Length: 134
Image 1 (tube, rainbow, N blue to C red):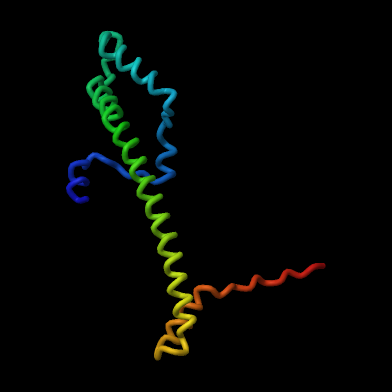
Image 2 (cartoon, rainbow, N blue to C red; image 1 turned 135 degrees about the vertical axis):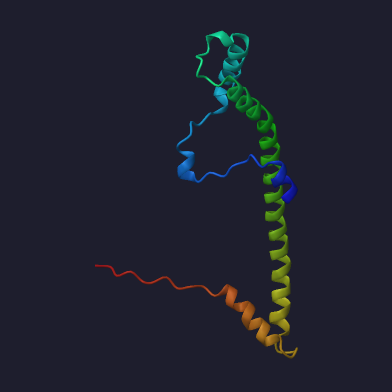
């Protein structure tokens, strides 16, 4: 992971309020960016002298390079999250079987009653305060 961070040292983190300061470019505008790139590279003479064409080309190329990576990472992240979700579910089903066995044998195995009491705490329901009707 550290090697990846080193290789991607240009990656930034933005707080939500800071993200609001940037233009949000939706997928529908990607062809517009392509057209502007084509226009700027085919007709550099139309650009004002203060316009940094090299910076534009660098930023444009970065969007082209990062977009497929982000798509792949989002797919991978989703798959990993789904796998974790399923593994947690499977583990919980199995843990409930263990809990049932602990409850069944708590009076027969020394020390198991303490474990059973600790486990039972996870299933206590909290009572909601009663609201007064006026």
